[in-house]
Image 1 (spheres, rainbow, N blue to C red):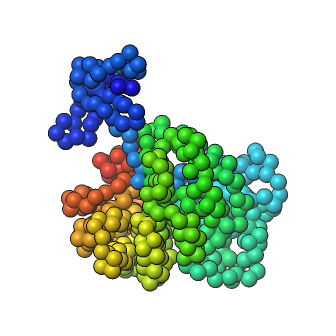
Image 2 (cartoon, helix red, strand yellow):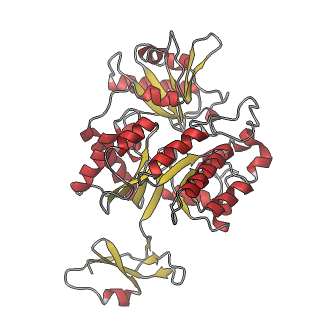
Image 3 (cartoon, rainbow, N blue to C red):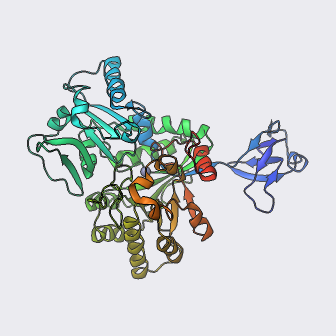
Length: 462
Ligand SMILES: [Zn+2]
């Protein structure tokens, strides 16, 4: 035995024998679980032995959906989480520019504002950001990561201020004066990010390790990483960065790379590399092809089957039409890729489930492991379809700590009854994978476990 932990309270995740005193590890596998006497009997001179002094010992945890690279990158950005009003957003941003002495003309990027925390609950516009700077292009992403706001300098730098183009699958919102409001929705967000300077591969490796070193300390030992599809990074550089880190033996966390590629061109470009799901090593693998057909409830871009309760003029935004969605997943699936899609609104969930059904009917295969992540606005029929079609539920249970403040406003009491229905997944025996979606929510899995157990926010509300 290489390592023995004894005198602990070991949680085994084995229903028949949930607790043990000691655990023995050989290589990178758990080789023995039992009483102190049983496990310590397997000790040799070379065994490293640690006395847990009664502490809890858990198996390594897996995060089912996480943006490690982006988490690493945004550590360098303006951090706007928790800003209580627009003045605080402006002050933090100005301080950031002053402290770093950022030259005029350089991009300034921040993330994490949430208008639901502001007294007037109104989303930022370019006019708010113009108070930060008129000399720097400034882009501030909302807490959901699914929309951003640009100042006038940024809109001019992107050449969209005087003449505003139509962005397929997105919107550069226009204000009443006919000029852009600064709000970039759907694919207009990615369009914005594509103007940022691109990091080098060595920088990417540092960003990945920066996040992993934090995550591993909270007990995460494996993760489905959603790190492709950042418009500010070439996805081939990201794959290369991961595989290089693996070769160098520097990854502290096992990584399964979700292939978030937005367009048919990107998918074809990826397929030309010849990879299939599962390629790689035991520590770092090519994961499933991923699409994100809708965005967030907070920004009313989640796609609902019926209009929003607090804005009957909209049902949200569908980023991919059902035809386009099916065409992309068919191309990926028939080329050896597993499939996952984010879906928040019930309209999107149903569209994705039916597309999966069609794919299974057209290309029957035992347990294709199709997955849908997020799954917030559900109905009884949707949950039943998960079970019937054998689809995995990727649940970011921690979302409810933020959404419980707005969900009733957005969808009303009736629809809410069947939504955030994590127990509905468990009761039906639907396989689930739990994730944090960090940096959207905190990466520490204890927050998700807390949300699952108590269904309150972190201040104990309601
Ligand atoms: Zn995500």
